[in-house]
Amino acid sequence: MQPTRNDMAEFFRLALNAQLSDVTSAVRWAESIVAADATPHIAFIELCISAAQPVSTILSLLADVPGDRTADLPVKMLLGHAFRLLESKAFPEQLLLPLYQLSRIEMFPDEVEYELDRLDDAYYLALDRTYGTMADVAQKFSKFLANYERYAPDIPLKPK
Image 1: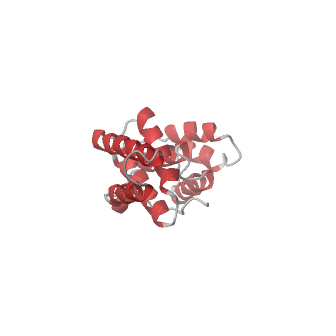
Image 2 (image 1 turned 90 degrees about the horizontal axis):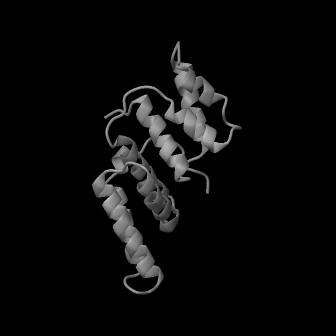
């Protein structure tokens, strides 16, 4: 399934909130829309010139992108992107903790929110050496994210 423009905007909004992408990627995406569309919506034009703006401004501009959103697709895209980051040698906690925190304030599918909550608990139990190991948590987290790999958008990975 091809994501809509609104799906992509919501993906970037979520990824920026979780610090799993950067402003440059969102701006480049908006630039590609402006270049391809004879009469682009003003939201895309504003995004193109917003690179120097605070992230909060860019988040608002992304929320203003018009169009239909496919239910749960932006979250699945975010999880697929996180899997690609994990495969590129990111540390699991650099991904798990922001995703878990984001799931508490955004509308994530129940099964995703539940699994992130379970993994967050496992992380802290392993960190305290109460139950399990960090290697176990990393393996479970990777297996969870692998389910969403096919949804990952084709964007550059965030620089380390």
